[in-house]
Amino acid sequence: MSVIDTSTDLGARAAGRLAEEPVAWLVTVDPHGTPQPTPVWFVRTGDGLVVASQPATAKLRNVRANPRVALHLNSTRTGDDVIVLVGAAAIDDAGLTEAERDAYDAKYSEPMRGIGMTPAQFHEEYSVILRIAPEKLRGF
Image 1: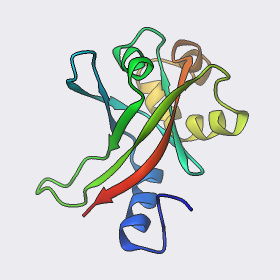
Image 2: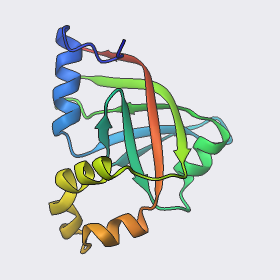
Image 3: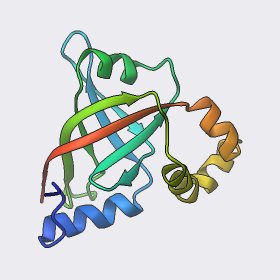
């Protein structure tokens, strides 16, 4: 059973926002135990999420040492519409599948152009893939 149960109000809102929101906050834990939130681009893939990363980042070092992560979306200005997923992340050396790459490009082609990159350039530079397996959804 999926953590994001779209038959519930929270699950339906989470699914909709995960499909539409361009940025989420990935929270990893550094070697000192300090949470480290980082804005990331992401794509939902079935029950999981994928994040493309540059190879030498703190978030990757943190996940290698401690796979426990949280991913949350921005709330409204008044603190409503909170969506938080908690789970585990793993580095996938196999990279994106063709379908995942197509989904990434469809979602982010305009922002990629905004940072002066083509999709090919983006995937070359952001070549390490994090796979996030959500275990719990919370929000209000």
